[in-house]
Length: 166
Ligand code: FE
Ligand code: FE
Ligand code: MG
Image (cartoon, rainbow, N blue to C red; front, side, top):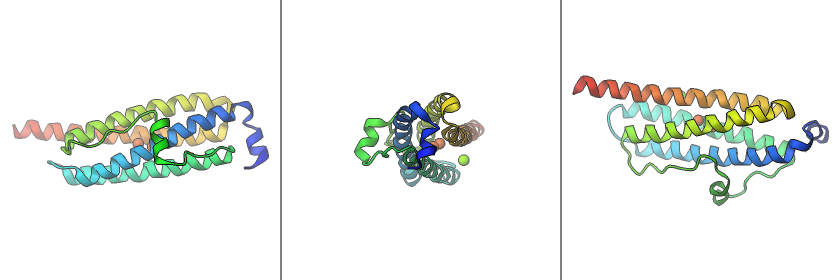
């Protein structure tokens, strides 16, 4: 832990560490939901969905790296077990019980919408107290907004295809 780096954050550090740990739990659960979703997804436009799901999985894992590094810089301990993901998560986990493309896309859109809310709140909270976390959160928030947009576009394409066929 860098002492002066920690010092400039001041009294907000513990609150930020706790919120970042909740986000870290979300990122791991999102990673697995995308990854396993890409393995089981079925239906029309499956190939396009697999590509998108795997890209997003890689992004969520990268977010986990970013958030974890910041927790450690702030002198915190990252969540240490998968069991703790469930205790800390904001957005939870939706198992892809129904592997049909439409259901998987809808589940992941819901997850992204939750992530957008979480990082938007964190962006507002860190703006005054912690510029480094603020900057990191802005980068992640842009990715989550892009993820939602990508999945909703894919779902729209899927719906257009159904209309044309029917
Ligand atoms: Fe993420
Ligand atoms: Fe995302
Ligand atoms: Mg994408």
